[in-house]
Image 1 (spheres, rainbow, N blue to C red):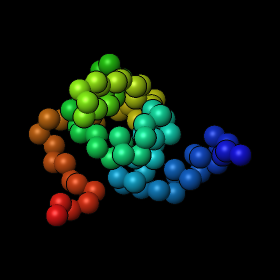
Image 2: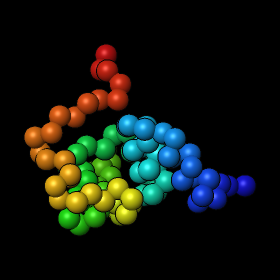
Image 3: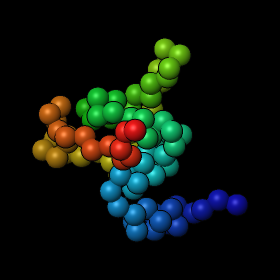
Length: 90
C-alpha cells in the first residue's frame, strides 16, 4: 500500500534543505535515491525542464523536472553558485 499524494505532500512539507530536495526529485522525477544524490547543478536544465541522469556506462537518460521545482529565472542557480556537499568527503 502506498501513500496518497496528500500524505506525500505533508511529508515533504515538514522536511527542509537538501533532504527535501532529494525527496522531491525522487518522487517527482522518478529518480532513484543514489541518482538524486549524485546530481550536479549542470544536470538540471531549467529552460528545457529536464534532468540529465548520468550513467557510468556512458548512457545518459533524461527525465522531467517536477513542476514544483521549476523556479523563475531570477531564482535559478547560476553557474557560479556555491555547491554545498551533503556529506563531507573523506
